[in-house]
Length: 596
Image 1: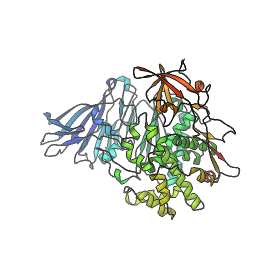
Image 2: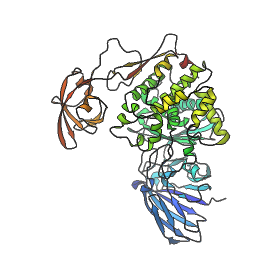
Image 3: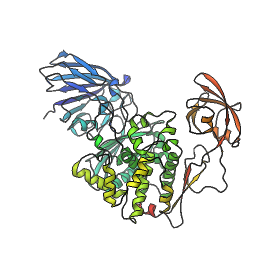
Image 4: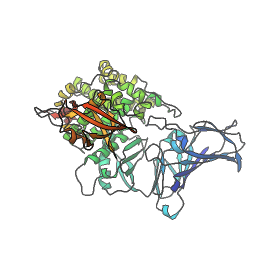
């Protein structure tokens, strides 16, 4: 049976990055059919105004033009008609991220939220989707990858698909191009891994390692998996990183050099980062795509949907992404502790942790986390990283109080069973109530401390109960984010400006000036371009400052916009904000307990 809403999408002009969409409504509203395009995409909490990329739009009925009026920034209404209504519109697609749509002569990609208008009144109705190939010999090898249920498709994947609702349609991104594809099964479920972009790498190893991640997480929550098949879509390029979760797929972007090289057995830092991203987005299949806040059930994509629970959905997922790599045997305890130390250091170095709670961070994601500026490290805390540490603290608290009989795993499985039973989103206080029910513990004080205060988490004491020492140290160099080991005896702090920098043709651009730092006290600001230190061109700041002592005064020349400034700065001691973790002799019980 034909669906009441039919979409057809064609890469009409890859050279000019343009998709053409035809939308047919068989029985439009008598008073004039209304259409809307989402303002944001689930998983990325920022109003993105996708409608700004619609270039032109026309309507017709029985071959005759129909007037269509724009009501607001993302809403249109057609005049009343007596037959089926057809819209034809073009969308500009040149967003290389995982959130929008992209098209050129080498590749195409789109999320439905960027290209498919919702038909008012038909959001719960089935919709058919036809994906057409671009014309020309140059595109003869192009294929389609998507988890959208197929109805009648060619071997290449071009053809007809069906979504049972607009909400389902939004959750199935589509990759187009001459990509490489490998398949595997995890706990009996077919998985496809698609990689596009220019690269050289060992995709078979990537698939083997990904399978371990998938099987561990499926078993963690319990079989069967919540999908019949799953698709990974990875685009590799230069200086890119990110992912976006969907109910049966994920879109990923990463550096091409992060792929494992042929014949390489070790896990490089870049490959480890990629595996962590894969693990993170796959875990979201349960935690946020199914288990989710009531504020997202259903999604209102026309405006912000506020919740104080993002720490639980992004933070806990961030805790499990690296933990999964340990538990499925891809990394050892030392490598895992190194990653954990880096997360702890990252949170500690931001003064924002003393000004914003995790609940506030979650609630303010729309206006603060996704709109960061030069002052963000001083004013906000990440619900990803501090959320991951809160998850660690809760896990260790549960293990300690129950003598190892209860852990965060049990809470996550209980949340999953609740969703299977009722399919309902969680009220703002429900996550905490379920955690207390599962553990049989009074956790009110813990949650008040971890979520609703700016006090540091009690990680040193909690880790010590598990045989892990946590110490603060001075960074050895600008890239020292923490790791394994103990501070060297007698180490003295180096001289510091208290800035984060990026390369600039004129010298160094100040990305952030940290609270209370020497640079801030001297009046430096984010965006300033540092030209010279004591008359010498600004270059490697670590090496230049290594020749100075704490308390010495230096002269800085810098540009603020087009104005030359001269500042005298008294160098401060670098803070002891670099975490070192060390497993005590005979310790590591918690780490051993997490092994698969």
